[in-house]
Each structure stands twice: as structure tokens, then as C-alpha cells.
Image (cartoon, rainbow, N blue to C red; front, side, top):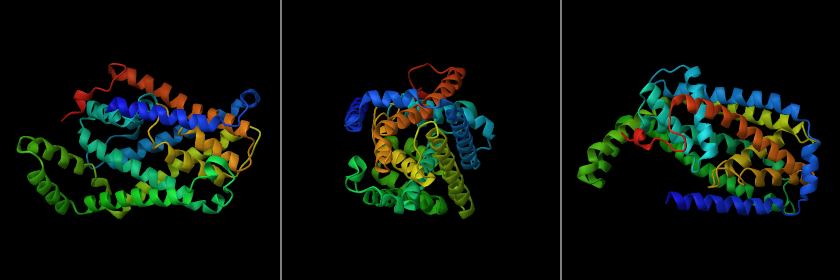
Length: 336
């Protein structure tokens, strides 16, 4: 199954890259890369690491019901998770950071994964919010705008909103009605799980539910949501800084829309590093705004590299410091 997922992801990446290069002159892309002012990447990377620190703070905040862990201790673990997502398929970094947190702080992996899932739901809701907030901008993405123009962005955004909004509602209900949730979980385990596996399944399920305790009050939910908005606005600021390295200009709202669309697209299976799923929609959005295709491609490639390389290198540094065998996630440590 893992091999199939990997090769399906590679196939999707290849198809999307093929779509991206249609009509592009590689010599023009190379010229755009040669003339770029790469010093603009430095403030962009600095802002991006501020966003990563904000992610570490958000995770520390969500884990408080389980254990109070300083943000400075969470930052290396978040960085390791990003590194894992960037070099392994199927977002394996999420499991990796849960395992590292267990090794360092003794927090159960199942409880940690609950907070990770909630994080991703909030991230998706904010990304969809970026798209909905910029619906007037979508009017510019007409039917003759190629890859993006041929997509029903409004329909996709609405479908995503229903999926992730529904998931958020379910998790909030589970967190705010713990006794009812526990009784439902116990009934399901008693009636649906073979007797030999009930005890272990029950332990995993209830540890998972403890990871949702940060959602038990509206104030906590609001704090997590506001932090998520700040995180993604900071990442959009990086898009803005990198834009100044190239000879084009679009509005900050257009970059918010690009950020929302490309990050929704990266939820699709792909080759490691979100190859294709990031680049193709990014180039298409900029082309729809009238950016020269070669410059749009050069910018998107440099932006992708600036998002991928620094966090991956830092994650490798922290990963090596953990003493985990390179090339695999210690699955046995994830079992409880």
C-alpha cells in the first residue's frame, strides 16, 4: 500500500509538471532566474522562520493539557517534522515529530497525533478562508486562464470548506462533550472491535481524545484560530519578499490567494517535497494575473526552494542531534 501511495504521488507530480511546462521556454525561465535579486530571499526566509516559531507556540499551547512544554523545546521538533514532510512521502514528518516528542517529553504518540490533526484542520480552514476572502480576485481567473481558469475554484473551495469545516465541527463536539464521546467510543470498541484487540484499541482511543482537550473552550479555539491566521499571513509575507526578487508585481491579496490555492493543492499525493502540486498551481495563478509565464515559473521555483531548503537543512541538523537512524521513522517507538 505504501509503495502504491508513493508511485501514485510520483505520477501526479509528473503529470502536473508536464502541465506546468506547456508553452514555457526554458531559456526564458533561465534568464529570469539569472536576473533575480536573491538578496530578497533573506528577509523572506527570516519571516518564514518566525512563522515556524509561531507554529511551535501554537503546538505548545495545544499540548498544555497534556504537558507544559516551552516553545523553545517545541521549535526543533516542529522543524524535524517539516524536514520529514519534505523528504519522505505521505507527510511522514507528522508521525516523526510525534515520535520525537514522545522520546523527549513522554507524551503519548496517539494524543500528539490528535493535536497534529487538529492543527492541519485549522490550517486548511485558514487556507480556504484566504480563498473565500479573495473571491473578488477570482473574477480575474477567467476561462482563458489555462490550468486555473479551467478549474472551478469556487466549487473546490466550497467542497473543501464542507469537508474541513465538518471535520472541525466533529472534533469540537468531541472535545466539548467528553463524556458522551467516551461512551460512544466505548460502545464502538465493545461492539465492533474483536475482543483480543479491545484493550489496546481502548487505550489508543482514549489517549487520542486527551489530545483534543485544548478545544474545550471557545477562548482556546479562538486562540488557536488567530495563531493559525498569523502563521499563514507571515508565510504570505515571505511570498511578498520573494516577489521583489523578480520583475513583476501583484497585490498582497493575490499572493494570499496563491498561498491558499497552492497549499490546498499540496494535500494531494505527490513526490516528496510537494513537487508539482506546489509549482503548477502557483505558476498558473500568476499567469492568470498577467505575469509573464517564464517569470511566473522562475518565481515559483525559487519560492518553492526557499520554502523547502532552509527548513529541511535545519531539520536535518536537529534530527541528527536526536540520534535517530537516518532514512526511516522509528515505527516501533510509535506503537503504544
